[in-house]
Length: 236
Image 1 (spheres, rainbow, N blue to C red):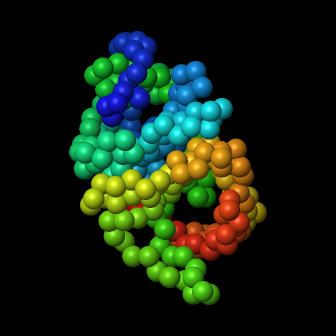
Image 2: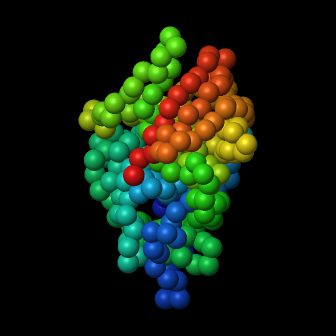
């Protein structure tokens, strides 16, 4: 299935003249659309975006892609860093028309328009684009340098998604996402999709979390019970 099919699967309407073009600030945050049991989410933060498609009742991950983006004069431009289904799209640049109709975002790929409803406005202490830069091993924090193979986590005001990728080989290794809260030093995730293990859908995980400058530290246990102590650095 081609890259744009998920966004433009249903032709809903044409853009009337009253709709206004979007600015980058209007895009920031999380958006959702649905078709039956299939959920679609879009998250825009720190010049980065992720698209995910999944079925929560069926505990099924379907697809994700994402990368950098810019928005101006009604045009949304994005360069893909990962695609779980078509690796040949990685590194390509796409463009679509973006319009606002009240609180509804209309995205037009040229094949049709999908209506997206805002989930949140991207405001949260943790909202942003993060890359894992350290992991505790044998009592010492191992530094993970910037390289082609990386794990990033994009958070809006209420939603999160991590992806493990290699931008040089265009490989996709896995992803997971859902909703989160960060209150009183506790970071809690509720999993809506997980590409590697569907049995984790519906689970909640809590971690001790803190932020110092651009570094986010969290400690706890994975869904398998393994200890986790990681550092994530905000990417701009």
